[in-house]
Length: 292
Picture: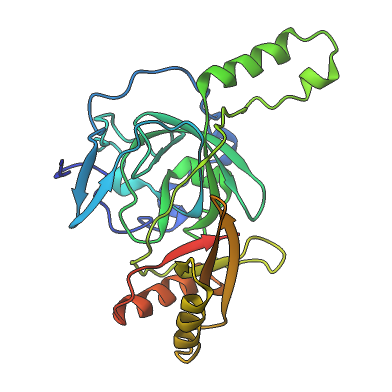
């Protein structure tokens, strides 16, 4: 067990002020990171650690890691402070913080609302405030166009530096082979079963990003059951609490049917946070934000 006592990741707010406090012309924003093979950091990689009374577990490998959720960003307040890997935090660098991924890990982050993508190097721990799955540097948030809103709906996908360089080399050395040229430079080595991370939602802030009706949909999943009757009982219980539309979404996992009870879709990130806060106040702890 390891407890973080002093690092820039111990932050409770998703950002530290409006864009004006960290103004920099967009034309000077740096290029994305280029994944390269690196040893694990000597710092920030305990098997588990505790922050604000909650235990987090570091993944032994990032291979196949894919996660959807809400991103936040951190900037001027933490600029120059040491990250969990003991590297100084640079708000203008293409970096990020994550609670589970090994340090360092290269990730491709996609804004699910506008399709913008960045490649970042994860070198810090966080965010430790509720529903958020990744904390972006100011520059990364600028390039994804989420600085103004403060949060964004994203997909986080770990990159394999070996495959990334292989794809780059094949593109450079290709002599007109269209199929090779079309290969993505952000190829990910994915095992048969992807790692889909789940993060519980327990924090409320003032983010209010509006979700397009044609874009990604946000739900709060309150439980998942093998028996449909159990799901029906929870649905009936929630339906009388005025939390929003309650539905049951059924899927097959590991050859077994799973019935997931969800509230939503919800109109804003703040709506999701408020819903989570109400559930927590009622003593319901088995919930998480889901984006589809």
